[in-house]
Length: 189
Length: 113
Image (cartoon, rainbow over all chains, first blue to last red; front, top):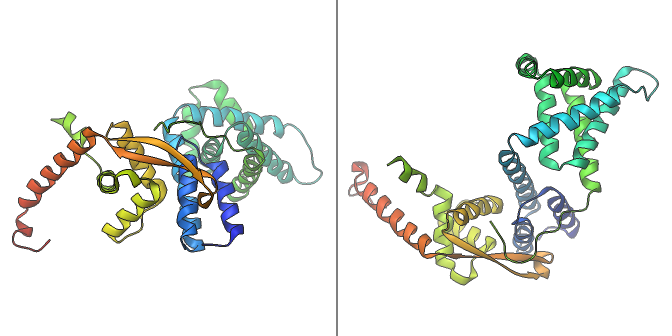
C-alpha cells in the first residue's frame, strides 16, 4: 500500500476527473488493489489511465456538442478578457491572464473533457500546420471566424505558454468544484 | 454476413466475459483484473476492464448490481457483474469459432498450445 497522502491525492483527483456510472467502483477498485500492496507508480499509472480513458470516452460521446461548447465558451471568454488591459507591462502578461481566465471559465462551466477539448482547439489554431485549415473551416461560419480571430489575438502565441496557462486556470476551476455524486441504486451501464 | 461481424467480442471483452463466468458471484473489478492478469501474465488497467464491462453490458451479455461500500475501498461501493444466458451463449459461440479457426491454421498443426 502506498502512503496515505498519495492515496488521498489520487482519490481526490479521481473524484473530480472521472465521470460515468462506474466512477465510484473504479475509484474503490483502485484503492482496494493499492491496499493489497501495490507500488506508488502503479497507483499513479492507474489513476492517470482512468482519468485519460474517462476523458476520451466523454469526448467521443459528445463529439459535436463538446467542441462547440468549448469553442464558444473558451474563445468567447478569451475574446472578452482580451479587450481589458489588466496588468501594466508587456501584452504577454495580459494574454497569459486571458488564457488562465478562459481556462478557468471553461473548467468551471464544463469539466475536464471540455477543458481538454478547448486546449486542443487552441493548439490547432496555434500550430502552423493546422492553423490555416481551422480558419478555412471557420470561414463557413462568419461569427465563429470573427470570434476565433479575436480570441487568438488575446491568447499567447507561444504554444507552451498558452497551453500551460489554460491548464492552470482550468485545473484550478476543476479543483474548486465539488465532485458529482454517483446515482444511487443499481449501476446502469 | 457483415451484420454478424458487429456481434463478435473484442479481445479484452472476451477475457473479461470469461473471467466473469469463472468468478461467479464474486465478480467485480478487482478479481476480474486479477483473473485476467493471472491468465495472461501481463498487467491490465482497471479502467479498461470497466470499458469492456460497459460494452458487454450494452450487448446484454452481463448484468450489474451495486454492492455495499467498504472502508478498504475508501467507502466506495463495488459493482458486481453476472453473466446472462446470452453471455454464456456468446462465450460458447466464440469458443467454437476460435477452435474451428485455430484447427485450420496449418502452422499450428501438431504444435503444442
